[in-house]
Image 1 (cartoon, rainbow, N blue to C red):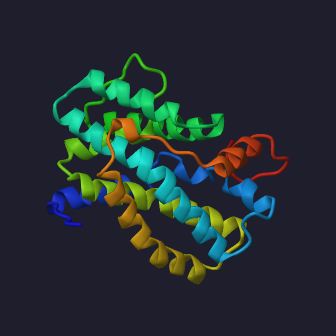
Image 2: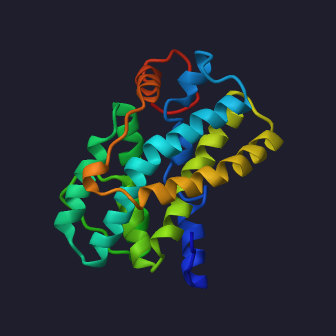
Length: 225
């Protein structure tokens, strides 16, 4: 995979992908908290399995193809296409919690981008996906898709590993080993996403959906639902 970007584009990508970006991604575990509570995930190897499966069977098949198509649409300033892609990605969120995760982060990113003088459409739409808004920012900042996808996926992965570090719990060294072992999966997910068209978008991970659903009523939790 060829990665090309300007210094300014790289700096903007680092800003957009940073855990310090005030969008609240750290507040959601996307079902992992319930999975750990129920004993489905008990150690580093199982965290790797859980996360790599989501990367290949969900992220690569929903978020990344939508990111690519949304960037292409925004280059043409095709707002109707963006609205359709926004509807599609939100329709792929299988639980109320997963949808809230996406739209709450989207709302926060929309506010931030407007404060940074980035043009943001959707003024009349209540729920906007974080994926779509990330695509808008990456396009306006002239970041190529492959580079944008790396930053976008890395940001998601960092939040998931941070959640696992707190919940399993894992040590900091184990977390860094996970980052290293999952990097090839991240690249593979991006490559897969480039081969998918709109008709191919969709994922089915029943255990993740069940965990997310039941997390909404979990008695005690650290993460938002």
